[in-house]
Amino acid sequence: MSTSSPLHLAVALDGAGWHPAAWREPGARPEALFTAGYWAGLVAEAERGLLDFVTFEDSLGLQSSHPTEPDTRTDRVRGRLDAVLVAARVAPLTRFIGLVPTVVATHTEPFHISKAIATLDHVSTGRAGLLVQVSARPDEAAHFGRRTLPRLGPEDRDTPAGRELTASLSAEAGDHVEVVRRLWDSWEDDAEIRDVATGRFIDREKLHYIDFEGGHFSVKGPSITPRPPQGQPVVSVLAHRNLPYPLVGRAADIGYVTPHSTGQARTAVAGIRAAQAAAGRAEEPLHIFGDLVVFLDDHQATATDRRARLDGLAGHPWTSDAEIFTGTPGHLADLLLAWHRAGLSGFRLRPGVIGHDLERITRGLVPELRRRGVFRHAYEADTLRGLLRLPRPANRYATA
Image (cartoon, rainbow, N blue to C red):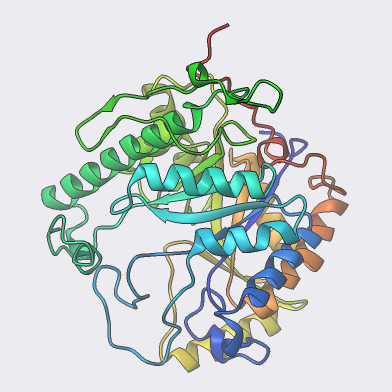
């Protein structure tokens, strides 16, 4: 891919930042984490930097230092506001930036999610998306009592039991997205008549049963919410490893990957493109974004010292599934462009400390990318699909 192609940029928002000690930094404002104004300010800064979209992290269990189990730590941020509701609150305060909340497909009914994201698309006038997440945590399953999940640890990921669980949850999430997409199409674009003179508000012939029958869901439809302004809001999926690649290939408009080198970026792109072709979608647009945690400062030594201080507060060097970049905006731009040439169409940056690193992204990295001719100087569309150059899909149920 040539670096002359547009580079897309998003930011992943989570609490005070992705480093577990971020809330203890000066300016972190931990007392504001559960206020609407905090999130509105973050998204306003991201929009000031002309970013494509922001994602909002969420889960159905408290954050934990253990990947599959709850913990009892009290020295880290615990608790979240609902991501979809935060996005809906912020939507009227913004004009262009996309809003992509996390939804947990494993325990949330697709009918509910379709309605919530369609509503977000309406209140944001076409800037909604969703980040589909699966959950293998037994403690989260216990909130609902509908199933039990095996207690598997990180060491079990590549065992037959681990691979079977990942494949099963991914297949369920694929069906979940398919139901959501069909429900978005269950109202044709012109189903609402609203003709006071004739007394007809709706054309019932333009509402459709979806009649989905699968291994995980049986959904009649139609939705109760009119078709979203984008037709189909943008669906995104995080794929750490190759096992979730089929879910990205089947269901997503954006797949997030976590390479740690240019070679790994190239391999991840090839894997997702193969999964996309296997799903019969080879001709459809599908963005592949690289995820990176970033600690940005004007000088390398400053960024290195800041990260070391945070690690000291946390009690150990912090690691992540994604590459952790520590350095200057110029050096980060070099890395992004190298991975861009390897086939990634964009990047989702995770600020190590939101109160510090978000502004270093919008006011340091973005100007640097502009100087190199690979990032926008103004928003060129007012929908998320427009920003990502994704066409508005035709309604699958509408007749010509």
